[in-house]
Length: 337
Image (cartoon, rainbow, N blue to C red):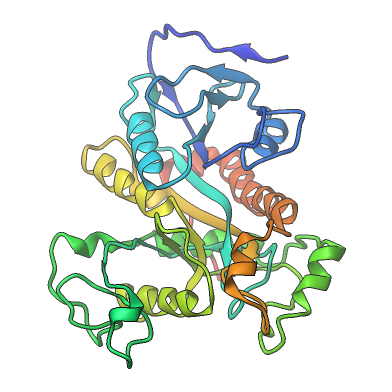
């Protein structure tokens, strides 16, 4: 039975984990699931908490130790919702772990639909752009960094405040989460398996779903296609100084991370306790021999598979933290091998 948490509290709830998603299709439970529903149902987030500063009511478990937040899609909603949560006096988030997760477009060079990628970097898309039809013919695309003079320069230009395009996460925590989940069976779907076979020349794309470490590129542009995927690969490589690789595209993660950075500076959250997990619902480019416009307008063939992967993979890390809470409270876990 769904309850409504008390509006009046004598002291803030000491929250252990915050599950962050971006959208739901219908109701939070009992119908066709979006990103929120599996978490609400399977983690028993049975109580509703009104959230005036957010896009959707919060959910919590009976113990008030786990909160689920649906932020709304796009960077502006992600940023505003995270700031609203972090500044809400009802919650003590100083030792909370944040599991930011959702479906994404996946680069077929590195992973397949249904695969789950833990990010070590989140990268944003503040950029200059000119229409490619007006760009020099040798340019691969018309997008380039502020203060640069061409796409994909060899080094980042000194362009404060635009350095905030890159948000490194706690690599030790990422490695820990990956070590727990790397051998998971994420399942498969016959229709998706058939679709994957068309990605001839992309061996990672034709594999059944798997867990990997791969980075998140967030943009308010819903871009798509082989050329734009090449841009994303270049952009993430540039802004991580060769330490990261683009795997998942989305429209929220850099907004979440900018809010986290500011909340951490205010001592409201611990940025070392943030995990970003994205799962592929579609490829970021068209199948070989097909047009990008056909691909970008097609329904996501892997939504159900990606939603299951997000919970299957993310819940392993979540449950481990909650089971060993005394240790996780005192110290952020790292991989042991």
